[in-house]
Length: 79
Figure 1: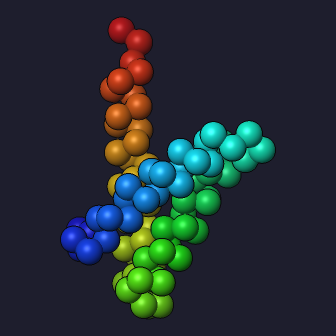
Figure 2: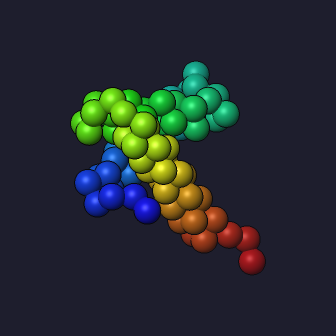
């Protein structure tokens, strides 16, 4: 479970992912790695450089990607 203090990182990751997607020279496969690094760095920068912050940053990235895919797959589905 992700602590409440980390939930604001998820929308930030959505914004970073959106900006990366709109950047023409960043390939799609690289976006997830950018989000992964950004999530860990953001988490550790705010909450300290320790194992728990790294894990919570990774979980925040997972929640961000999962929620984005849920919205995308639901809104853009082909019936």
